[in-house]
Amino acid sequence: MTSQDNPADGRDGPVLVVSAHAGDFVWRAGGGMALAASRGAAVTVLCLTYGERGESARAWRDGMQLTEIKELRRAEAAGAAGVLGASIEFLDAGDYPLRESPDLVDQIVRCFRRTEPAVVLTPVFLFEPHQPEQCEFKPEVLLDITGVFAIKRRAMECLVAQQHMWDYYTDLATRRGVQLRRNAGPNLGLAHNTMAEAYMRVYPQVTDVLQ
Image 1 (cartoon, helix red, strand yellow):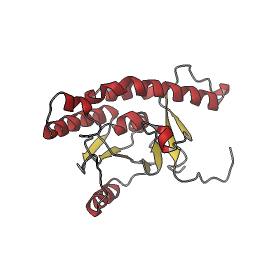
Image 2: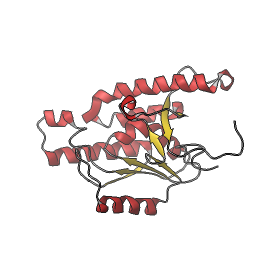
Image 3: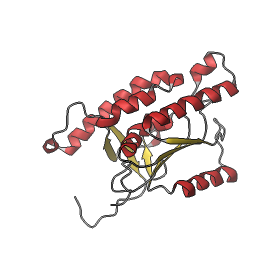
Image 4: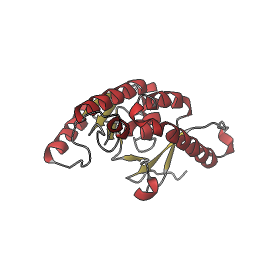
């Protein structure tokens, strides 16, 4: 089985999640990360920025300064990663704008070499963005996260600076769960409270059997 056969479950080895902002990995892939960790896979988050500008409106309204906000978001993200069973690394590459640079690419490559991931979330399996309609996102893979959703919810609640997202992503998991049940069919006997995350493939599935 290759990593493309079963996204985010970590069966084949380490999982690497590339997250642009401090909270992205929680909202979009927290369930997949918790599933992988529960099966014994090493899960690493590479956080490119702290989300200090575009993802921290509440902290700015509270009168915090840039350095304080970075420290706050770092602590929140580290706490959430711990809940999910993952380690986390921060690059502090600058938020809004986040600019590509040779140094940033080099740091990302070094992380890939160090972690040697079997599954990569973001460049291999695209997790669902906050506004999928604007990104032409298609939910091609639905991952059942029912058994670990309570863990994901606890991780979400670590991100106090984005409290307005807690219920949004709970509702989204419920809707994706409805789609999962419908596409899986009645024979699997899935519960009505099935929760799911959606992913989109970058590369085609390679198989010798259509099923």
